[in-house]
Image 1 (cartoon, rainbow, N blue to C red):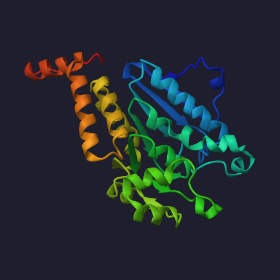
Image 2: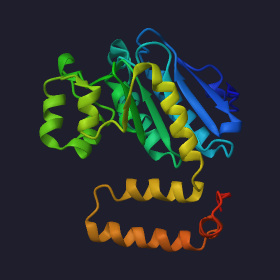
Image 3: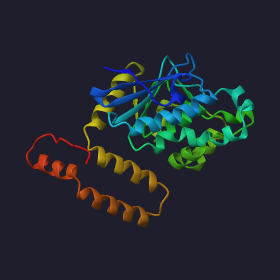
Image 4: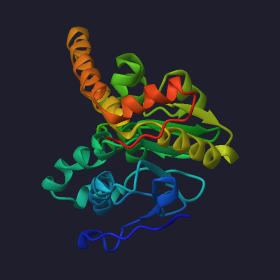
Length: 268
């Protein structure tokens, strides 16, 4: 059963535009955007989101983090007025804060329905898995404001879909449908709108069943080698494989395979 998460950090005593829930039995924590109808992300909220991700990443009760939203839309983007009022120091931290899901050692799932624009899209791109529905639309509309994406959106998108498609999205402020996002490899999975919660639950259950150590290693390896030469990526993969070879979880996995039973991973 999910309950409200309690934070020791006084900076998180009052969350701005979102809530956090934890379900210890499912080893799951949910970050829930809650400023309907469009879940606009404020400037202070960005820094709080970073702190929350860092806290959940250190919490041993949590194996998987989910980012979802209340209502019909994930997020239509940031508070436009806030950009004009923010200090240069605050603006310089935009990409670092929104990259928090990428830096987290644990798997992070973005459950996207409806509008997923601007920082909403950038936050989702920093996650490991993106589940979309029939209503999902992705966009980086900053060109309409005389600006460019500032929280890692164009850079992450280019790594995923290449420069031609990224220019089409960024330079034209073009909206991308859920099916196009799936076809281009932006989305992990596409489901009916009514099935988003069920699909998210299923992915959480699947991820929790794996070895936490092997999962953390796989995420870090893939992140670290995304833009590495093949020879370096293979070398790092070999080192990671060798380290896991000595783990309890690998021994347990091999024994469970031969004994035809479900493995009981300890994360060590």
